[in-house]
Length: 281
Image (cartoon, rainbow, N blue to C red; front, side, top):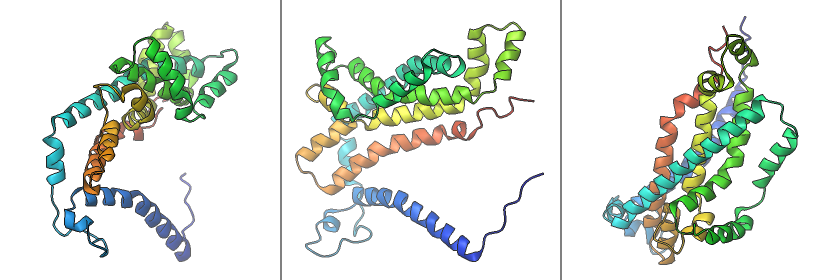
């Protein structure tokens, strides 16, 4: 029988609605400001001391036209996509097998190893970027795609392993035992049973890794700041150096956020599916 929750009183319902409205405001307000400034004309920004209008006087797409007619902007987008997707692939290839072993087997010192993995990310990136950059310079990996991909992999790998462990631990062990009785090898169990059932968790890992690489600035600045390869975050910093108007910065920020939103929407169906939905009959 389904358990029915007691009905809420009018006061509880009001508090609940106020809370939802507050959360929506803090989520949507920055997006509104970005879109507003990205389509604002000069008169809507430089008001001469008058209050800034709630909506631009004369909305325009001139800032988007400026960006998409800039050949460097296309190179920056392609570089950012290549680096982010490369980071996802390398992080998943290295982190998922490690998460499988730590999540399904009794490894000596497992708790200490997991604590060490996650504690690495407790330190700020700026504290580790100098030695990492020095290490990459010795191997001539500065200003290269594979160098920045590996640097971003160092940042993402602890999270990939930690979240992946939880995904594999959520799968009932009875499925694995039954497959062993039927003669399946460990690799077959991993490829045909555990990996498909852990798809929602793996997709969540991929989205997080993509976000981390796409938005990362510190390592990209130290490893790519003086080279020909650039990312959208470096492109935004370069434009800020010349004190551009707010509408141009907002336009670049919108272009920086849009691929992430689309990527998450495409993968949403995997994230909402249950990891073990329908697996136990």
